[in-house]
Picture 1 (cartoon, helix red, strand yellow):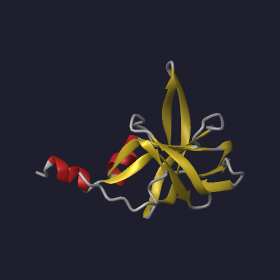
Picture 2: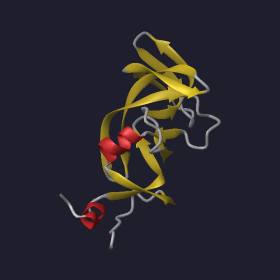
Picture 3: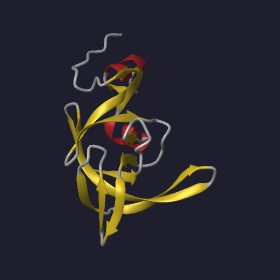
Length: 146
């Protein structure tokens, strides 16, 4: 078993908000939400199902046609359940690359952050600590001294 101090020294530290560089979209600020247990969510407008593909427009005006990988039901509050299409993205955070990561698509046009990152991705893929007092530090080479 690792010592408490060693556990923290070996972890990457990320800010509450980090830039995700998504293939086909570009760099978008994403909020890391450790309380959100569902898939990651990306903003999409004019969402249309075309066979087994999903067409949508991103916040920066890009239009995408991606393979539909599934659908999930999201409780948006007060017992209201909404189905969302799921697609996959390849992207980078700082120097780390990720392939085929699921994102549900929802209209987040009224939200400050157009990407919301769920705790499952944070736990299973990022393996990082979140410093809620920081933003956009993934590109920095940080050294923790404790």
